[in-house]
Amino acid sequence: MSDSDRKPLKAVGLMSGGLDSTLAARLLKDQGVEVIGLNFSTGFCTYDHHRAIARKGEDPRRLRNVAVQAGAEAQVEVRIIDVSDEYLEMVKHPPHGYGSAANPCIDCRIFMLNKAREIAEVEGAEIIFTGEVLGQRPMSQHHNALHMIEKETGLKGRLLRPLSAQRLAPTDAELAGRIDRGKLLDIKGRSRKEQHRLADQMEIEEYPQPSGGCCFLADHNFGRKFHDLVREEETMGRTVGRDEIMLLKVGRHFRISQRLKVIVGRDEAENNFLERFRAGRWKVAALDHLGPVSLVMGDPGDAELAVAASITARYCDGKGEASVRVKAERYTVAEGEPFGAGQPDRTSVMWVSPVTDESLASMKIVD
Image (cartoon, rainbow, N blue to C red; front, top):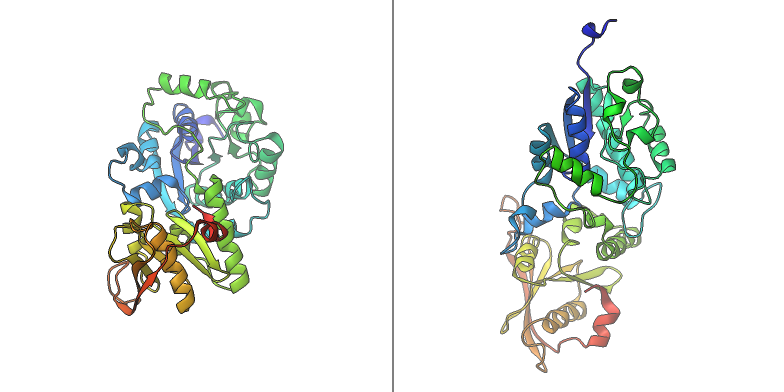
């Protein structure tokens, strides 16, 4: 078949919204490749949470959809695809384990590349690309990990990492001369100097800085809360779903028993966020003082509800008083009502002493 008879080369790739994947997309587009960016919504992206909670005075750059912005910068189409339910099941028990927190980096990459391969088959795309850089991340971007990921996804000869391509085995498209390997890069390591130089050259101006990435799972505090929740699921047989994951992203978390946890809002934005999840749960708040909204995760007895009230009192403006009046309300799950609505079907008003620091420390998951 002559070159003129061939269909234009098409590529689909993982675009997080970060600079590396944006550059990877542009490098291919600039060679005349038709590029489709894929952004898989996992439920663990910090940018999604910033938009959901919308704190006053939040930097507007943190409220944008960074993947859509990246598509505009790279001049390529980006598709947002919700995979959160399926992804959560993988994160609970990743075959290749976790990084330093709850980050299943290798299994995450395998998961997303398998999804990308399925879309590539539908689209007739020969290339699947990523913005990975050899040696940039210790768990998933060294030679052995990159090779293993390629093997386990069945993408040998099709998986292209344009930023480090000249340090890796060539893809079939490079060997066939359909992609100019000489116009791909040989970046290695954690320095961002070359990426910033290339961004300036390509006039890519808007991109998030890579301080810790945009994944909650790589955060140590979030990881502690996540592992605690998974242990509860395994011990109590309670299913961890989207709501439970959303609630890991806010508040102070305290475990008052094997089956019960209290989440205490830290500011007005978190209080408002917790209100949206009150249906089917106990909401606790001080009556006579400004303070947090707390949610009790599970079905508490009277004594356990008093502990939740005591924790809530500890964080209200009356925390220095001998006793504080606290109201606890259990909200119904009302079919057809707006998200987070429902009416209280049980109410308890009690006087409690704010919990002592010693007791608080023994219950704390993350402050």
